[in-house]
Image (cartoon, rainbow, N blue to C red):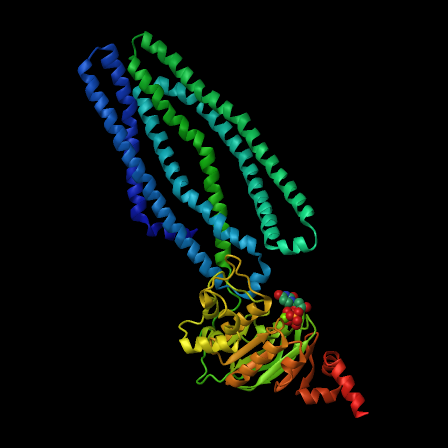
Length: 578
Ligand code: DUT
Ligand code: MG
């Protein structure tokens, strides 16, 4: 809440201008019934024709000034609130971006999206027209009450009698409607999610012939949506006529009682007409209060949710006195590293020494902990015990920005943005000299297919049917890693979708670039056999380690994998030997 108030306070000038316009508009509004009343008394009844011109001119003037002030008021409130929301959204987005992987493991995307979109929208409605109308109605109510009592206290009392009743019904309606709105909002989220999942996963749906099932599911949710909306309309239809009736009842009471005063000569007709006009300045605020309180309550709920998100601290924070190695060489060391996800042990007693310029290859079954291991290098997670060192500094004490700048990762799941190929490759690398960019594209074999596209590197991915194959996406993400020229390169299963020939060409290019420490996770022997050390993982432990030749001699898991992949070749070779 404090955060929001601070942002609002920053826009105080525009809010103050809006507020001034609002007060002036109300003051003008108060003159309207007065002139109408005087026209009746002085012109219609008193025959004072000369006054008609003055009164009409005043009414036209008021209408015109009222329009200008109304515009200014809305514009100022809109402007300041939009600025507040833009700032709030930016802060929230920055904050979410700063949170660690573990946070995103715990929270789903849909929920975070609704914090950024729906909750900020709720706050926007509250601080813009919610706040504006609230002020306006409170002032109307206060001023109108004073005027009514000044005109005639007896009539004022008569008109106030039914007000609590109106207010009671309004709040009853709001309570019911509020619950229904909540249901509608929840249901809409479900509907959106189903639609979104089905459109995003349309290939899976079609491949498994589930179109009919998914359509039925959607229809059912759509029907449910209709039902809840229908309930809402029903409540409105029940309560609104009652509110209407009570509001009109006030007029009837006032005109009846006032009629007696007019007939008795205690009050002029014009005053009575003016009075009955002022009454609506009491009724409208009352009728709106229900809706307004719910807008404000929704805003408070949204602010609380957003505050909770802001309170979320990144698990991985920069060390208070971050260290930077004198010379960055790319020496990565794991010492007795263990890692757990929420208490489930994933890595156990890992010791690795990756010398600068060396290549460590990692093999093992799915779920063995390979990705988890490499996530510890760039400190996307912190190990549970033991330490990871980068150039002799514990990564937990190293400057995070420097560390991450020097560890370039090609992730297992390629993620490309809907942007040009060039922007995707240069993503996060800052200024990239042209020759570095070209060399990366050449080495990652991106040039090969991009040069055949009519727009080349300016082709926007994901637009107008520009789709890419799995291997092409992998090549782009390899180029993205190479462009950063980091001292440590991590390839997580990033050549799995490539044909042997392309994989070999990329390997050869890497060999030629060298000068960086490389971690390669791969399943193919061909991708790992030249590594300085091959680690074979099983269940979070290194069960075999050594060079290709050493591991073959060991005749263990690695040898088995080798035999599987080169069965025909090995058999032929063994026959020949015999
Ligand atoms: N795991 C979690 N939470 C996560 C990620 C993984 O509990 O956020 C578990 C699943 C698995 C183990 O950790 O049992 C190791 O996962 P990892 O992704 O490290 O496995 P991998 O060796 O990279 O498998 P793959 O070859 O399928 O990529
Ligand atoms: Mg993995």
